Image (cartoon, rainbow, N blue to C red; front, side, top):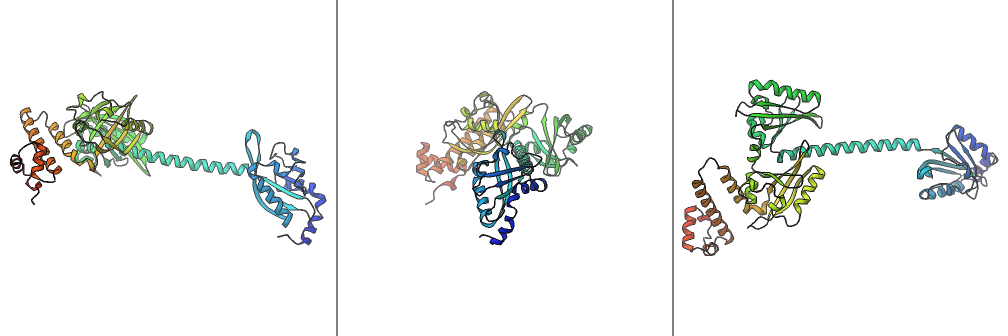
Length: 452
């Protein structure tokens, strides 16, 4: 609503002094002041010591709305309308075109000098405020980037636990006690890899000073280093490296240990199917569980194969997964389908991590068979068990065990497919029903038969 005429009449006494008032405002309270006619055209410009808008003097004779960017024209129109109707317009922020396509933010307020007088607009340069705001935004974004980089590093360390062929432990940097350890570390250090245990206590007495010095040096210098020490039991020489890192507010050490004589032994005994490839996906090493899954006989037959070829990749899923590992460093729990020779498709979950050693980049992959593939798990477990006995059991005995295992597995599977019906299961195996019944009794599988 309009203010009383008497209020505007008081200011009308100053309308003839509008240019002088503009200069006075610039000197004491603003960076720029304009005298605007009733038609919205700029009649006079007064600037402070620092020019807000380079070349603003030529604004004289131009409509005020033409001096701002198109997206803020409406604010100028509202400001002028409010000044004309109520005598005083509240402050609004607009942008004026600057050099090189930039924008100059200015906060404007306006007052009308009488009912028929000009509008006096005073502006404040907001570039310093905008710069502070931008620095705050940049700092906030930096904090967010640091946070997500730290989260990614933590995820990468955890995935490394799953796929590394070496023993991996996280120690508290203050007392060198275990916070977390992977299964390979548990097999190597025993109780020394339990949470709260001390790996230092499980090396020979003559090596303890060296490993404690390694941990202390890594903690103090912030640099990774490596030493060779001898375990107390078993009598093995291992290479131990320690890298400091911070997890939230806790200083930690990432410790990796490998047997100097045969670093691949740890990888060989991993219970999960695991494979190491080069960066292009060619297999370098596969553990027995993976060899059994791929039905390759031994890992020598797999070396040099593309991972997708070994697992019957028909959709390019492995090439895509390897590309994600190369790009991101880690991939966790990606669903995959394995098309293995002579078997129905098997669903699994794959995890991968980039394992960089110097200039060489390898990729570690572990496979977890999911519930739909439960029928394939006994085969994988059975083959892995037989493979683990090589060197300990004579071949003739291994063959007998293999035949017994295969017979039991095939009879169980036939009964499952036939829903426990003896005749149907015998037909699947192409043997007489009475012969199958004898086998079932000998194998202790009578509970699998349909009784009614």
